[in-house]
Amino acid sequence: MEIRNLKDTALADIVASIAEAFADYFVPISANVTYWQKRLEAARVDFSRSYGLFDKDRLAGFILNGIDMLQGQLTAFNTGTGVLAAARGHKVVDQLYAYALPLLRESGITLCSLEVIDRNERAIHVYERIGFSIHKKLHCFRGRLQVGATGVQASRVPFAAIADAALPCDAFYSWDNTAAAVQAAGDRYHCYTLEQEEKTIGYCIHNPETGHLIQFEATTGNPDDWQPLLTGIATIAPEVRINNVDGSRKTLLEALNAAGLENFLDQYEMRMPLAGS
Image (cartoon, rainbow, N blue to C red; front, side, top):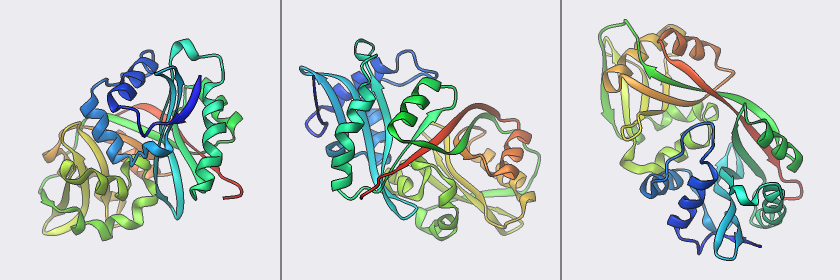
């Protein structure tokens, strides 16, 4: 067994290991290479700072790290950890982090972060053993928007047109939904402003390939505008998926429940500062 970075590992081999490692996961995981290429690009994955445990040429375990700034800190975000069934029981994740952490510190990383399904108690215990702690709870929704307001229009715009409005809200969004993720995704995401009675009430960013709402905000500061905002979004995408709504956003969570969406999954964001960085 040997641990090394993944810069020389073919994406198809990485995806094959992802699919095998997550074959019995809580939610279905795609084995499509094109899907993963797009997802990992948006997650800013740096394969030279992502690591794998190899059994000869076979990738038996891995950590895929996105590298970018997060709230003022250069961060390694673990966008995917997996261990093949044959390698489980040998603390592979501990071994990978023991190898990776000194290298991440040397490259200037000051924070490690990840997301984990709240029911995945085994993984949570592993991450806590390594040094992570729970930072916040995140809620995931899906379904058909059931909204009743009228007279809301959506206008497609470039991200630059809403960037100033999005910036103050960036701290509410998880790694795959920040402004940096939107910019990394390029034109794959569609941005809209929402207007009611010739007044801008907010914006949304939508991934038309997957149906995910990446970001959406009522920029008036009026909680009553969540319903018309969701009405405008329904004209673009009546069926939506929303990942990782910050658990502190009680008014927004109430609005999503009132709009008939299902809170089908919850996650934790976990963080680990790197001492000595």
